[in-house]
Amino acid sequence: MLSKVPGVRSAARYRLEHSTVPAMQRYLTVYELDSPDVLKSAAWEAAGAYGNWATRIRPLLTSRHHSVFERIA
Image (cartoon, rainbow, N blue to C red):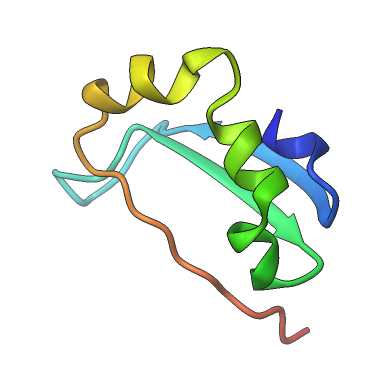
């Protein structure tokens, strides 16, 4: 649902194959956004709560965090 939010250009999910970092997260989702403000929108908030997904999945997350990067090339 988050990939359908206005301002989200693309979304991709990854599963870790190998890492030299012992505590590296097993899964990663990358969203390409028009602006970091998309993350503050009502549409983003509503999509994240769709079908009560957030309340079901978040207790299972052990290392949830967000980072915003700016594309430079």
